[in-house]
Image 1 (cartoon, protein in one colour):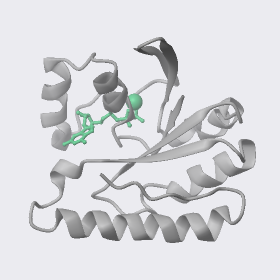
Image 2 (tube, rainbow, N blue to C red):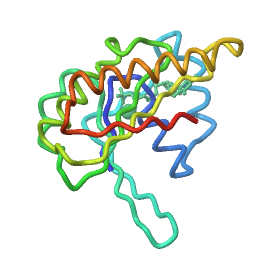
Image 3 (cartoon, protein in one colour):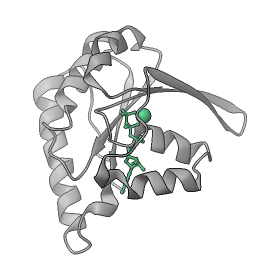
Length: 157
Ligand SMILES: Nc1nc2c(ncn2[C@@H]2O[C@H](COP(=O)(O)OP(=O)(O)OP(=O)(O)O)[C@@H](O)[C@H]2O)c(=O)[nH]1
Ligand SMILES: [Mg+2]
Protein backbone atom coordinates (compact mmCIF):
# COMPACT_ATOMS: atom_id res chain seq x y z
CA UNK A 1 0.00 0.00 0.00
CA UNK A 2 1.51 3.27 -1.19
CA UNK A 3 0.67 6.42 0.80
CA UNK A 4 1.33 9.70 -0.98
CA UNK A 5 0.21 13.31 -0.81
CA UNK A 6 1.52 16.75 -0.08
CA UNK A 7 3.60 17.43 3.02
CA UNK A 8 1.77 17.88 6.27
CA UNK A 9 -1.46 16.25 5.11
CA UNK A 10 -1.30 13.57 7.82
CA UNK A 11 0.05 10.50 5.99
CA UNK A 12 2.30 9.36 8.82
CA UNK A 13 -0.44 10.10 11.36
CA UNK A 14 -2.86 7.94 9.37
CA UNK A 15 -0.36 5.07 9.26
CA UNK A 16 0.26 5.39 13.00
CA UNK A 17 -3.47 5.34 13.69
CA UNK A 18 -4.22 2.30 11.61
CA UNK A 19 -1.25 0.35 12.98
CA UNK A 20 -2.07 1.39 16.57
CA UNK A 21 1.21 3.23 17.02
CA UNK A 22 -0.32 6.60 17.89
CA UNK A 23 1.28 8.00 21.06
CA UNK A 24 0.78 10.93 23.42
CA UNK A 25 3.82 12.52 21.82
CA UNK A 26 2.04 12.43 18.43
CA UNK A 27 -1.02 14.14 19.94
CA UNK A 28 1.18 16.85 21.45
CA UNK A 29 2.95 17.38 18.12
CA UNK A 30 -0.45 17.91 16.49
CA UNK A 31 -1.30 20.62 19.02
CA UNK A 32 1.89 22.52 18.29
CA UNK A 33 1.57 22.45 14.52
CA UNK A 34 0.64 26.12 14.35
CA UNK A 35 4.09 26.97 15.67
CA UNK A 36 5.56 24.88 12.86
CA UNK A 37 6.84 22.09 15.09
CA UNK A 38 6.41 18.66 13.53
CA UNK A 39 8.33 15.63 12.34
CA UNK A 40 8.33 15.30 8.55
CA UNK A 41 9.01 11.90 7.00
CA UNK A 42 12.48 11.65 5.57
CA UNK A 43 12.25 9.81 2.23
CA UNK A 44 10.08 6.81 3.04
CA UNK A 45 8.98 4.87 6.13
CA UNK A 46 7.68 1.34 5.89
CA UNK A 47 5.32 -0.36 8.34
CA UNK A 48 3.60 -3.71 8.54
CA UNK A 49 -0.16 -3.84 9.23
CA UNK A 50 -1.67 -7.23 10.04
CA UNK A 51 -5.41 -7.59 9.61
CA UNK A 52 -6.47 -11.14 10.45
CA UNK A 53 -4.44 -13.35 8.16
CA UNK A 54 -3.69 -10.51 5.72
CA UNK A 55 -0.43 -8.57 5.91
CA UNK A 56 -0.26 -5.10 4.39
CA UNK A 57 3.08 -3.47 3.67
CA UNK A 58 2.55 0.26 4.14
CA UNK A 59 4.95 2.60 2.36
CA UNK A 60 4.63 6.07 3.80
CA UNK A 61 6.25 8.63 1.50
CA UNK A 62 7.63 12.04 2.38
CA UNK A 63 5.40 14.81 1.05
CA UNK A 64 8.13 17.37 0.48
CA UNK A 65 8.57 18.44 -3.13
CA UNK A 66 12.22 17.46 -3.22
CA UNK A 67 11.18 13.78 -3.17
CA UNK A 68 8.47 13.90 -5.85
CA UNK A 69 10.61 12.64 -8.72
CA UNK A 70 11.96 9.63 -6.87
CA UNK A 71 8.49 8.57 -5.65
CA UNK A 72 7.49 7.82 -9.23
CA UNK A 73 9.76 4.77 -9.28
CA UNK A 74 7.80 3.11 -6.50
CA UNK A 75 4.37 3.41 -8.11
CA UNK A 76 3.30 0.07 -9.53
CA UNK A 77 0.20 -1.61 -10.92
CA UNK A 78 0.36 -4.14 -8.09
CA UNK A 79 -0.10 -1.55 -5.37
CA UNK A 80 -3.09 -0.03 -3.63
CA UNK A 81 -2.60 3.74 -3.53
CA UNK A 82 -3.79 6.15 -0.88
CA UNK A 83 -3.65 9.84 -1.75
CA UNK A 84 -3.97 11.81 1.46
CA UNK A 85 -5.23 15.40 1.32
CA UNK A 86 -6.11 18.14 3.80
CA UNK A 87 -9.86 18.91 3.68
CA UNK A 88 -9.31 22.47 4.89
CA UNK A 89 -7.32 23.31 1.74
CA UNK A 90 -8.43 23.29 -1.87
CA UNK A 91 -7.56 20.52 -4.27
CA UNK A 92 -4.99 22.61 -6.07
CA UNK A 93 -3.13 23.37 -2.89
CA UNK A 94 -3.20 19.66 -2.07
CA UNK A 95 -1.60 18.92 -5.46
CA UNK A 96 -4.22 16.21 -6.05
CA UNK A 97 -3.95 16.55 -9.81
CA UNK A 98 -0.23 15.84 -9.65
CA UNK A 99 -0.72 12.65 -7.67
CA UNK A 100 -3.62 11.35 -9.76
CA UNK A 101 -1.59 11.99 -12.92
CA UNK A 102 1.47 10.26 -11.49
CA UNK A 103 -0.51 7.16 -10.58
CA UNK A 104 -2.35 7.21 -13.89
CA UNK A 105 0.97 7.30 -15.74
CA UNK A 106 2.81 4.63 -13.75
CA UNK A 107 0.01 2.37 -12.53
CA UNK A 108 -3.06 2.93 -14.72
CA UNK A 109 -5.19 0.06 -13.42
CA UNK A 110 -4.33 0.19 -9.73
CA UNK A 111 -6.86 1.14 -7.05
CA UNK A 112 -6.65 4.64 -5.66
CA UNK A 113 -8.26 5.79 -2.43
CA UNK A 114 -8.45 9.47 -1.58
CA UNK A 115 -8.30 10.06 2.15
CA UNK A 116 -9.32 13.46 3.50
CA UNK A 117 -7.73 14.56 6.79
CA UNK A 118 -8.18 17.55 9.13
CA UNK A 119 -11.95 17.02 9.02
CA UNK A 120 -11.90 17.98 12.72
CA UNK A 121 -10.86 21.48 11.63
CA UNK A 122 -14.01 22.00 9.56
CA UNK A 123 -16.76 23.86 11.37
CA UNK A 124 -19.42 21.56 12.87
CA UNK A 125 -22.23 23.52 11.25
CA UNK A 126 -20.92 23.33 7.70
CA UNK A 127 -18.97 20.06 7.83
CA UNK A 128 -21.44 18.02 5.82
CA UNK A 129 -21.78 20.71 3.14
CA UNK A 130 -18.01 21.17 2.97
CA UNK A 131 -17.46 17.43 2.52
CA UNK A 132 -20.05 17.29 -0.27
CA UNK A 133 -18.39 20.23 -2.02
CA UNK A 134 -14.99 18.51 -1.73
CA UNK A 135 -16.42 15.22 -2.96
CA UNK A 136 -18.00 16.87 -6.03
CA UNK A 137 -14.79 18.78 -6.78
CA UNK A 138 -12.78 15.55 -6.61
CA UNK A 139 -15.21 13.77 -8.90
CA UNK A 140 -14.91 16.65 -11.42
CA UNK A 141 -11.13 16.64 -11.22
CA UNK A 142 -10.99 12.87 -11.52
CA UNK A 143 -13.15 12.82 -14.63
CA UNK A 144 -11.24 15.64 -16.27
CA UNK A 145 -7.80 14.14 -15.82
CA UNK A 146 -8.29 10.42 -15.42
CA UNK A 147 -10.70 10.01 -18.36
CA UNK A 148 -11.45 6.42 -19.24
CA UNK A 149 -8.42 4.97 -17.52
CA UNK A 150 -9.53 5.20 -13.92
CA UNK A 151 -13.05 4.59 -12.59
CA UNK A 152 -14.41 6.84 -9.85
CA UNK A 153 -16.73 5.71 -7.04
CA UNK A 154 -17.74 8.15 -4.33
CA UNK A 155 -17.67 6.67 -0.87
CA UNK A 156 -18.13 9.50 1.56
CA UNK A 157 -18.34 8.52 5.23
N1 LIG B 1 -6.00 18.44 13.63
C1 LIG B 1 -5.47 17.47 12.89
N2 LIG B 1 -4.13 17.33 12.88
C2 LIG B 1 -3.62 16.35 12.10
C3 LIG B 1 -4.43 15.47 11.33
N3 LIG B 1 -3.62 14.62 10.68
C4 LIG B 1 -2.36 14.96 11.01
N4 LIG B 1 -2.35 16.02 11.86
C5 LIG B 1 -1.17 16.72 12.41
O1 LIG B 1 -0.51 17.32 11.30
C6 LIG B 1 0.92 17.24 11.44
C7 LIG B 1 1.53 16.60 10.21
O2 LIG B 1 1.13 15.24 10.19
P1 LIG B 1 2.05 14.11 9.54
O3 LIG B 1 1.30 12.83 9.70
O4 LIG B 1 3.44 14.18 10.00
O5 LIG B 1 2.00 14.60 8.00
P2 LIG B 1 2.71 13.93 6.75
O6 LIG B 1 1.74 13.99 5.63
O7 LIG B 1 3.24 12.58 7.10
O8 LIG B 1 3.91 14.95 6.48
P3 LIG B 1 5.25 14.66 5.61
O9 LIG B 1 5.92 13.44 6.20
O10 LIG B 1 6.10 15.87 5.70
O11 LIG B 1 4.83 14.42 4.20
C8 LIG B 1 1.17 16.47 12.72
O12 LIG B 1 1.50 17.41 13.72
C9 LIG B 1 -0.15 15.76 13.03
O13 LIG B 1 -0.36 15.62 14.41
C10 LIG B 1 -5.86 15.64 11.39
O14 LIG B 1 -6.66 14.92 10.76
N5 LIG B 1 -6.31 16.67 12.19
MG1 LIG C 1 5.09 11.81 7.04
